[in-house]
Amino acid sequence: MRMNSPLLGLFAITACGWLQLSNVAYGSIAGGIAVPILIEDGFTDDVIVEANAAFSATNGYGAEVTNTVSDSIDNLTFYQQGLPGGASGLPVNGLIMSSADSISTFQLEPATQLNVLLLESGGTYSPGEAEMRLAIPQAFPSIYFLATSYGSRSQVSGQINFADGTAPVPFTITVPVSDGGDPSAAISGLGEVNSVDGTFLAPTTSPHAIFQVALDLIALGADSHPIASIDFLSNAVEGAGVVNIFGLSGAAASQGQSLVKGIYSGLVGGDETVGSQATHGLVQLSVSKTLTLSGYVLWKGQKYPFKGATNGNGFFNTTIPLKTGGSLSVNLVGVADGVRVTLNDGTAQPTGYIHGSAFDGKKHFGPAGLCNGMVEPVSPSDPKVLPSGTGWFQTKVSSTGTFSIIGTLADGQPFSAGGYLNQDGWGTYYTGLYANAAKGSLFGRLGFFSQSLEPTIVESLTQWTCPANPKAKFFRSGFTTQLAMIGATYQPPNAHTNAFGIDPTTQPYVSGLLTGGDFSSDVWLQLATNLDSVVAGVTATSGTVPTGFTMKVTPKTGLFAGSFIHPVTNKKVAFKGLLVSPDLIGLSSIGVFLGPDEPGNLQIWPASSPE
Image (cartoon, rainbow, N blue to C red; front, side, top):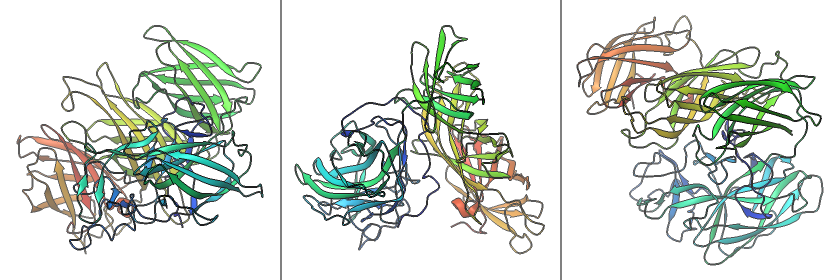
């Protein structure tokens, strides 16, 4: 049974056009942005070793998986990023933004439970035997399978079953071989681990991939009926292919319609150069009841306002003079759940979808109060080349549905942005970074998820671009990377606890860790705190504690600041950070400081001694 995940509704943060293919296809087809489909039941095997898995000398990683992607041919299976010894694993949060079309997203099942439907080589199955059942029956113009075949390309046949009693519709898809280099890869360059002896198959030696396999339901005449389940009936292979199906995504309708009243916001991206300001921007749009509209485009680091009225067909077109010369054309067309946007400045012509709601200025789609969280790279790298540490962020939602976000990235760069939330609790943000002429950027989609009696969870998938700058303190060559953000509602302390959530009269210490920042080794700390949330004393449990360590927390917001004398330079180094929910990520705070040659992190646990 699939557990609810806060990332299930996450849309791709960039969008581009679509490609019409046959009903048996790879990549993207007519239908627009595809988002994960919630599967109630149907996964048969666990083929992903979790990042914190323990290797056993007698059992290898056998206790962590129930099968292998190869169906025990050579004991190879996938693993999560962060598994010791692994070079390129699957994202820990399970979110995959497909490289095949840059607009479709998939959500992996947790690595700790069954996470694939495995079809054996040459296997045949009766209806209901190898079946994925949707939690909510729904109609789609197209669906996408997140799948791979191990050993050889596979032809998988099955049938789509409908909730309204419509007769099942047969289909056939082709699943590429995992190491064949097919361009329909949703995620590629993956390594594998031998679940028996723990040896790794390096991605540089034999890179593997999981693919986005498209099925056009319009072409099958099956787009107007709610899908209840999908039966997989046979796996006819060209060799010894074993098929692993990791999940489904469904595409939103792409038919044009008149714009309707509401507030819309979203990112628009053009090609697979994700994060490039030359091909991505943000559109904010307000449409009135009389179909007049106003808004702005953030394009190549500049903000351009526009306003006007829709034409006789309810569409909108305008041309905006650019500050750098030339012009930008803006074309807006209504779709079922938002607005399709086409931008064209003569050098780039991205098309994408922005989402919104019939926002009336009174609805409140987000949580009251503050949400605090951490920012981590999706694919950690060499800390001298790409920031591999952790940053922090804080969000605040107003009673009218606007949100603000502030924070500090892992290289010490502060940022702030804001936007609107739609009725599903989603908002989009974009902000420029760095002071030099070729500005960088940070943009993404932010989602808030609430459950009864549980803290609100906020998550985001974000693109971070830093331009090349020979005068920069760090990362002079520049970079573009993807970030994952996760946070939760911040609960200020009560009268009997300090900001770390402890009573200093019974537990006077919290544990800290200094990493990176040109320290010769990690430094484990024991921090003495008082009821005013001031760190009054520091000792080291491993390594040498830096002198002059001070730290004070603002309990109302969870923000903290402090400094210490760096042992390499003997100069004062300042740090800033934020308290986060220990129930969510295991930490009590994350802070950022700058060493002489690389950034560093201060992490704090509520426990008196770190584990």
